[in-house]
Length: 446
View 1 (cartoon, helix red, strand yellow):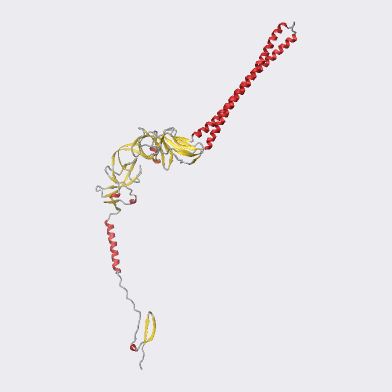
View 2: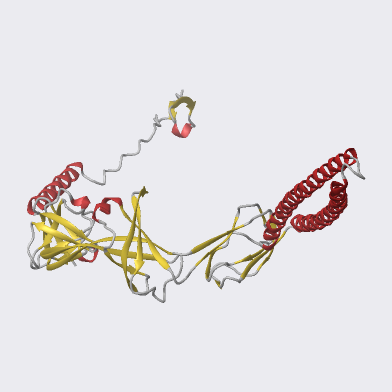
């Protein structure tokens, strides 16, 4: 009897038994997972360690060979200058603008609307040049009303004079009548005086004397009345004239406001500023234009407050308009400090240059002193006057530089005085070397 062979097959980790055909009954087959062999590593670990150690040794060797504290800088990135010896002018530099010494600020006297713009900023004007035309219909009506009121007051004055004249004539007529009666009684009393006690009784004569006395009193009273009436009339005329003056002042004020609706320059010069536009509504007191003379100019310069103690009125100065230099003199120093600066005023001493214009930005240099036969150099970056500061001094071959401590003295604008640490013709690097504060020497490469 033929025996069957049991074959155990393990596929992907799962074992199973099944009967093989007769052809394979005599064989026992074991099927197992095939394990893929691992690829050999690309780099040998001992080799990597050796390379790393070699690199470290190379870096250490380079560090040992290079001098301590030395850096390499490109020559094109550096600015240098040589130490000079000579006379040094101590100066204070500043910046500012040119302003007109004579300026007129034109403002609106009444609310209005800009109806026409005839001139803009920068236009040259004379005193009668029209810059703007404003419109205010209500003001025009007020001017007419003020004119009518003034006319009415003048009419009242004429009426008052006529009434006074008529009243005075009436009172004078009464005085004339009383005077005539007085003279008649006086004549009768003189006639009766001779006949008194005879043809004319004493009673009649005394009656005539009493009547004469009464008539004299009435004449005197009427005369006083007329004098008082004249005084009253005079005061009435004065009062009426004051009414006329008030009406006239009001009219002139309204008329002046109406005239100011036509905005004129007022002086000869240039329109420096005009902050209004066509159709804009303006209120009373609002700026309409600023006009300044283009001949009487001065420079308003701002200088550092730390240099203020060096400035004195009368010091010589130079004003740079970017196109030309002009001589000047310091005429005023303001005590107010703003943003770390103070403002000074410099007047031109040799006439205003042709390139000068109001509000033109300018630079100025004020001469505050003079030092003879001293060492100086162009001002390095971040160096202050009367201080200690280290600079790099270039070697003779200009291929290296060593740190050198220097003492600095007076500030001369572009230049600064050197008080110690340098010799004439020494050359120093002026560039900002703050980042190399712990470096003692540098190499310069092209």
